[in-house]
Image (cartoon, rainbow, N blue to C red; front, side, top):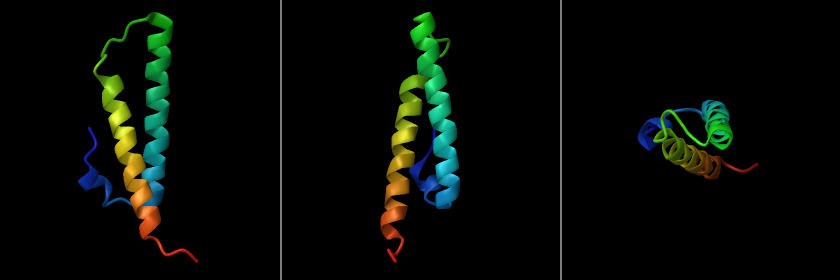
Length: 69
């Protein structure tokens, strides 16, 4: 599970890379669930969704802090 406190220490590029990896993992989990109607570790699905929301929140915060030029 990702912590928002730890995410805020990362750069915007690192956060976006983490987001891409997380979205890929989430896609694979959803795809596995839809094809098999079962997951080996069902607790990962909501956990990954929450992690994605945390990442998006921190990315949005960083974008708003950055000076617009």
